[in-house]
Length: 311
Image (cartoon, rainbow, N blue to C red; front, side, top):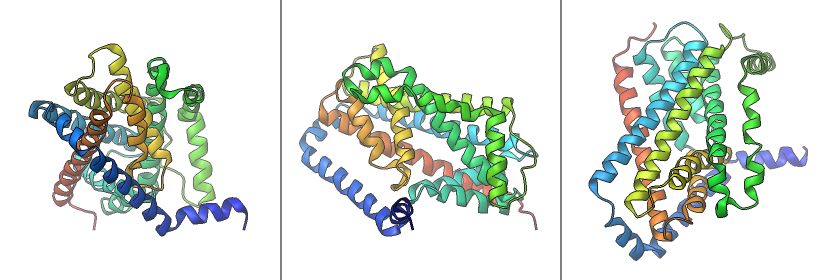
């Protein structure tokens, strides 16, 4: 076994994954306890209206991710009704919160099969939708990079300029060949039909809309705690959240990028807010997006109950 193979085997170990999660949670708890007085003072500045608006934007963000996923699903085969699509996507997203980074894909395949969607189509849809999210998030982050790089990211900003280059993977001729080769290697049947420019374009537009809403959620919270309402603040919130999500996606050893995303957002917003205020924004943002995910899962469960499954 090569050194790389041994390293991958270690990272795949459940003990390592849960260990990473325990460390992330432990550090988060320590940060909250250490700054509890400052957090309490900052929390008093957040009004109920601000939290409601931020929660609404979180729900819209999660809804955009569903629409992007459904655009890919519709592009890969026969039409699937809104209720079974919601059941598959809503429930499968709970898999993001399990260490490993693949459980939402597995869940989508199994729940999709219950509704007559071939497993290869569900797996490919979820994988492509995640890829679209990563690439669009990188592009959104780089659009905001002139603001982010100003005393925030330092030398790391240079490397981020290369992120949009991966967008070439989303070109249908390229992506369809990659998918076909992966299916052949896995000894699976080919897809019912290839991805189109229209389908991938729709998914990308929904993803970008989602990043704007997610960043707006962070911006609303940050403004509520004293951040200036200027263009730089918007860029920091939108671009920072998108890049934080991309980093969290890459760090697959923790569920839903826990810890990694928060560290990136803390670094991005540190120049415009006091530490306690930044920490509160990051924590509240994570909670609101989680609540939105749980809400979508609840809708998915209701939709699943109301759909007749193939016999």
